[in-house]
Length: 430
Image (cartoon, rainbow, N blue to C red):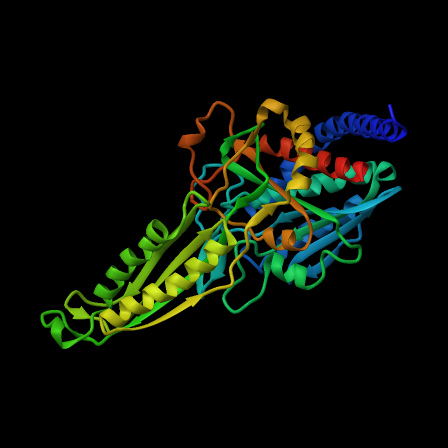
């Protein structure tokens, strides 16, 4: 055996032993911390707040961090909280992120800690709930912060905890979310080398992890299409220009972009019109209306082509009906992209956390996540942990962003174990 091979073998053995030593500590720390993390989760769930309005949430996060021993920075990207742990040994800097905002959804789940909060959304007072599990993400990361603090003298490097507001999108006219955090320099001073994030999933059984290399979640863009016609009596449509008929044709024509212009064997794509607003009376052809929709893509070139074709198809459909059309498409979120080398490095950590048989390599999904803005700056790994209660068929449970959404407290234990292992393994292997 050559000298180089001997050195590499010794490094591998050393890293393996280090990981095993941490594994024993992690299991004990998770068992010790789980009850408190569940209590935190119930509080955050019961006190859900909308994007860029997470004032109580941020105060509670900062308070818990101070009680642990951290000196958190508040007001980051409006309502975000950031804390830094400097380990007792030299090493790299890793970032851990949790999103903290709720959604304008009225909770129907019959739980003692159900949300009864009200918030302002688009000028209206609406019910607010954690309909996507961000309360669990926040609590898991606080648990990880507490556990790492207890062994900080053994931690080989630095950990930056990022509690991010407005993942669901900032209110109209405001900046927010991961993009604003990056803009404000959250990945700097100290400079983060890699970042990890997780998402609890209601359709995945507790104890399971889902992950994949490269694109795991789609890029997303929102669009608005305004159609201006000419008002007329419903009995005499020839006297006007009908934006309703134009919209009907436009919806069908937009669907042909994916089905006839995209090479779907390369990557999936979705165009959905979710709302059409116009008209006030059954026998009046309105002067104008507008449509709202979403675009999901997993390939950058296809994304560019789809956005161009939407503008072309919408405009030409309007012209064919003598209607005026304006198309607005936002900047959106990029693809949530798991850097392949980091994925390969950390996959064994996830398998040790859940058991190899409980880690599933999945196909990409067309949901979206603004964690992707962090991944544009540094290598990142994003994965899903199960939240479907034991004994329940995952295909029968309510989806995310719905009134009946529910994830089991038991799912957070694996979330803590997985985040602890990827963090300490990454720091140890550098």
